[in-house]
Length: 221
Image (cartoon, rainbow, N blue to C red; front, side, top):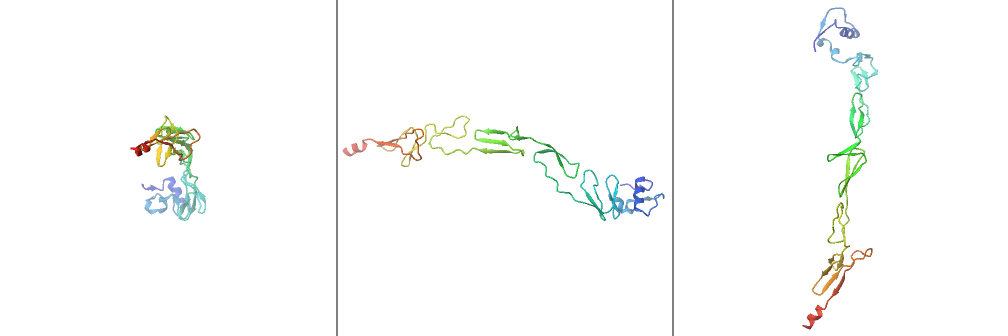
């Protein structure tokens, strides 16, 4: 910063407030000779805001339109930022021209995989995945939990997430699983069939089995 002469009106006013210096003398002073001039306040005598207004020690003032309130002390302005309200999570434009930032515009949509969704809108990204645009601007998704199928050959339908048993649930012959509507040869002499009547199936229902005469034939041979 260059030296300023006492002929400069703003510096003359500054020195006049400090006292003890004749502003009428044509004297050129460097900044090194006046420590107070390096600060935006009158150290030990008062404080000055950005507009040049002087405040006495003990007074509260705001140095500038974008600053927080300060207290004028012997050591200069003592400024404390207040606890400002939190900005809305959907805020997209913030005004910082005041002590506390203020949200000027909120986002009322969600961006997900290159698409825009309105707030609270629900949508599917796959037959099994359902999503929702939350008021916070986040997208929350959930995957459908498919129940365990009761058949060995479940089938998938178009636009259906979970497989279904078209022919009904399984039957059991001891530890052997018999698909619904099918015959299964358990051994050389035993054939089991899984019958299913809508609404009558129970967990671990037994298959209907029949034995042929193979055992008696073998015994006679």
